[in-house]
Image 1 (cartoon, rainbow, N blue to C red):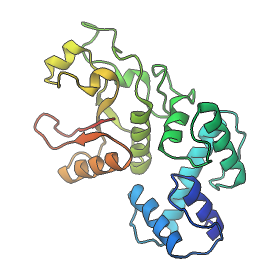
Image 2 (cartoon, helix red, strand yellow; image 1 turned 90 degrees about the vertical axis):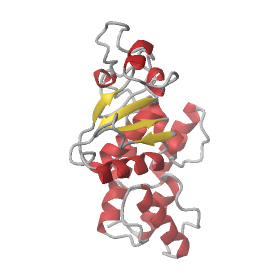
Image 3 (tube, one colour; image 1 turned 60 degrees about the vertical axis):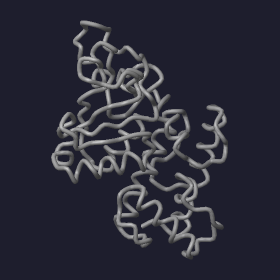
Length: 245
């Protein structure tokens, strides 16, 4: 179990949930920050740092450290956010032209995933640990485009998909990624659909999006993770969930 001080470091420097003094005291601000973290990651938001909260925090911290190491940080991937991890975040932010406060917020995570070099063949400008280029290919089958009319996939979208995958611990199937204008028209997409810009994906998660409640939960999480728009439970969508940024 992370110590009180380690918990506060995590809560402060991962998404900035905690804004209080780093004193290792579990006061009202510590509890409120714990609740925000729990809510953001789909845990029971009771403010109690128990086994599930601890495990999730360690997993998120390891993910952060692993991404930073892909940029040469040389950190121990131990799930403990301390001075070295914060310094590595700050150094990365400076290189990327981000606010160098050491806090790994949404923009920093997106930049880490978007330029990590772990794309598995994703178009330049968007990369991901678990999603490959071919998963976002236009379904026109090469009749109207080269498969990737938008070129790049949005790093912000990939970050949301990675967080959903981490939350559910299951592979995610992209049922619709990029679309050329002709294919988008054929499937009834909006004229300026985010699919044509590499900023949208329709996804299926086995055992999750098979039910209306499951799909509603994914939509809720997508918004929490930074989606501009997400919906499901329409006749056209079936068991899939739409997410765009």
